[in-house]
Every structure is written in C-alpha cells, then in structure tokens.
Image (tube, rainbow, N blue to C red; front, top):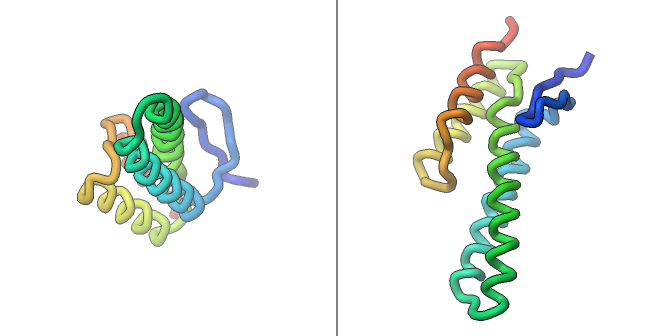
Length: 114
C-alpha cells in the first residue's frame, strides 16, 4: 500500500518520497533566485511580466515546501535528511518558513513507524 498524505487542498496524494520533494524544492528555490535577479535588472513591461512570473514561482515554491514538510518519513535516514534540509533553509535564509510548515515538519517526524 503506498504512503499517502493530505495536501493543503485536503486531497489525498501519493507521496513522492522525501528525497524527490527536497530536490523539487531546491529546483524551485534556484528558479526563484534566478528570476529574482532578472526582475531586479528589468525595466518597463519586462519588469511587470517578470513580476508576474515571480509571483507564480513564489507560490509554487511555497506549495512544494509545504509538501516537503508534510511528507511522511519512513526511516530515520529520511528524517535526518529532511531535518538537515529545513535547518539549512532557515540558516541560510533561502526562503521563509512559516509556523504551519514547521508544525507540519515536526508532525511528520512523530508519525515515523518503527
């Protein structure tokens, strides 16, 4: 039976695995950083279009971060990987982590089955 989780829209989804979710989030953060640099240098209509893209990527990054926080851990190794990743996110200021994400992260650790 596949592990399932509930996303913020309350729909059940098959878990993609902690490593895949972390990789997807890292990609979102890199995309956000790249587009942010472009938006800082853009002017006129380009700045408006890049601003709209930036808003969409920020929303996507937040959704992927939430999915990574909620994702259940199956092993101690996954728990350590997930904890280390979120620690790096907060330590380096790569993105803002809200209280709900931290609660979801801690909640996912309590559901580890032995």
